[in-house]
Image (cartoon, rainbow, N blue to C red):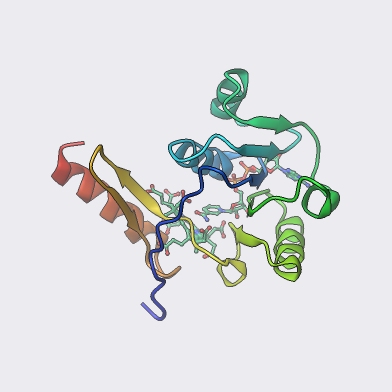
Length: 154
Ligand SMILES: C[C@@]1(CC(=O)O)c2cc3[nH]c(cc4nc(cc5[nH]c(cc(n2)[C@H]1CCC(=O)O)[C@@](C)(CC(=O)O)[C@@H]5CCC(=O)O)C(CC(=O)O)=C4CCC(=O)O)c(CCC(=O)O)c3CC(=O)O
Ligand SMILES: NC(=O)C1=CN([C@@H]2O[C@H](COP(=O)(O)OP(=O)(O)OC[C@H]3O[C@@H](n4cnc5c(N)ncnc54)[C@H](O)[C@@H]3O)[C@@H](O)[C@H]2O)C=CC1
């Protein structure tokens, strides 16, 4: 890989996480994040069916509308932002704003705008394993996760 990223294991249990978008990618990532924190706000006009079930169970806060700049600049300033809408321009706008404010951001459709990459994760009672290809090959990351799960009998 061109550039390897350092796997920093971070306590996010008290961080405010903002996810913009509620489609397939947001759903997958929220499912992963819920193993690590309950402080998740999701801003999206529509929710993936799986996410709707989670919202019904009050696993995260759902703000049912499109993203606004004040979602990031306002008093509820998030610590970490995931831009995962289906709109490339909106995702890029979120990325730029977060960078200008020093907020840690992940832009799902543009790896150059990611302060961190979202990892593949295998979690057991004893360990958390994070996998990443430095943005070079997310498909290989996923296959590695599947192999590790198989090896662990998960
Ligand atoms: C750079 C990164 C930034 C970030 O963090 O968002 C990023 C970026 C992009 N991914 C794209 C495509 C795909 N990504 C996946 C899968 C995963 N992608 C994930 C992470 C990352 N993806 C970050 C780096 C990870 C690393 O380097 O290891 C995982 C690990 C975590 C998660 O998403 O939950 C998850 C596996 C979870 C699991 O199963 O374990 C699949 C496969 C599938 O979905 O089945 C495809 C289809 C193609 C294929 O098969 O390769 C595109 C093109 C999108 C488009 O143009 O539409 C971009 C945009 C770009 O490259 O700029
Ligand atoms: N990093 C990764 O692993 C991958 C990233 N992607 C990228 O991730 C992004 C999301 O992909 P999917 O979830 O498949 O899309 P999707 O079309 O399933 O979902 C998009 C979501 O964004 C919401 N949305 C649209 N405009 C919005 C706005 N202005 N404010 C708030 N919410 C808004 C929609 O209501 C919907 O919930 C795309 O940009 C796609 O290119 C796609 C595949 C893999």
